[in-house]
Image 1 (spheres, rainbow, N blue to C red):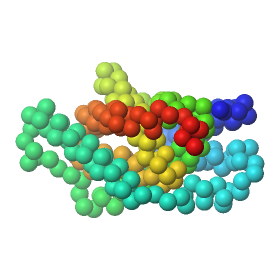
Image 2 (image 1 turned 90 degrees about the horizontal axis):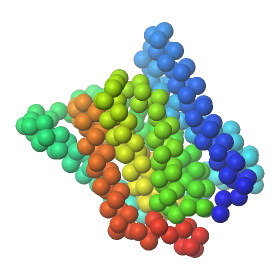
Image 3 (image 1 turned 60 degrees about the vertical axis):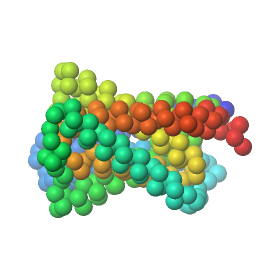
Image 4 (image 1 turned 90 degrees about the vertical axis):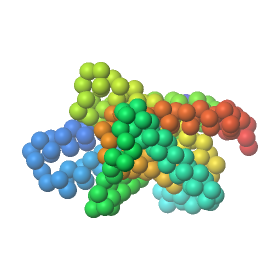
Length: 268
């Protein structure tokens, strides 16, 4: 069960993660408006994504009064992960993207030989941006802290749904700034939320197998990176991808219901 103290700090973690993110995002928008260099813009965008980790560092003494930062990092990064977990989660996401792209071309009635990918010169920058933004910046907060606290009270599936909603709406300013409006914006928000909540379930399933935050970062990275390598308008791609992640999450829950519907304390 979540103690009153833990519940209070978890609430403050979420509040600060939202407030600091929006403040940093506002600063980034201002820097873009005064036309600072593209490098500075990209650095600021990455800094925004690190907000959950910044909040952990700010609150660390309150959250973990008896643990040093070195011990905390060791606890989250040094546990053994079965290589099959890396492979399975990677192949699942590649399959989802392939199905999404195929669906786009079939539904759009476009020949598959017209598919294009980002240029070779863009691969490294996109890879670096995908890795150093959300993948590395968010997970120590969302999964390393929040998910573990939520799983003290809720079964993994419920904890995933709660965190998925909070994690998804944390991105709301980015959705509003996506460039879409009206019905298209509504579709974008719905698809994004479905994808994020489904990914939250998938991350929880794989993360609970080792309690090593690297696997959460790994899945988060591939989610971001794979969406950027195909040159398709992001809205239809996100819609089809979100359906793929939702189906995958449902199948995982169906096939591994004991792992996702049993309280963490009951497993011990």
